[in-house]
Length: 171
Image 1 (cartoon, one colour):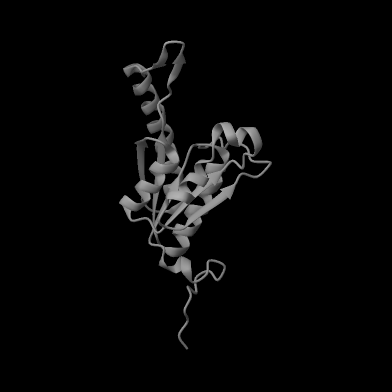
Image 2: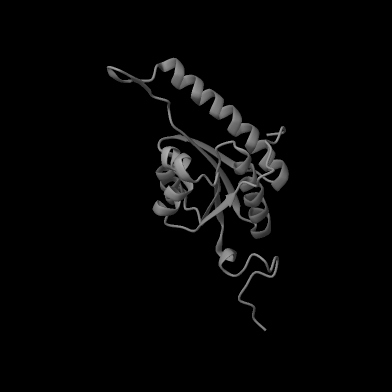
């Protein structure tokens, strides 16, 4: 008898059996940690490559005269801190997965840039956390997950943060 689904984990289903490259977008929040846990599980079960991606935006400052451009020092500090955090998350992911994990950092608008990188990297699925903001917070802060879903050409798995989620001290 020929099976049309992956026998390793029946909860994953037949469509997931084609995932060879999993892109996990992280912003270092507790909901991103939850997404990372799921991405590691999926990569392990499907023997897929796991790629961590962090997109950062440089802060801009509004003054009465207009927007102030970022200084070189601010740009360097944001990149330095982002690189250090991403490296910590990569080490944790590798330890949990038991094999190498690629980690990339990019600058840009997160929602659109995640989708662009997924296409460029040939990702079969994007995994990311969502803060689940509603009302005025969503209006003011937007939804990165929604933008990723709108622009991505591959499936997007979003995971809401749980109410009791606490930052992981190890990451």
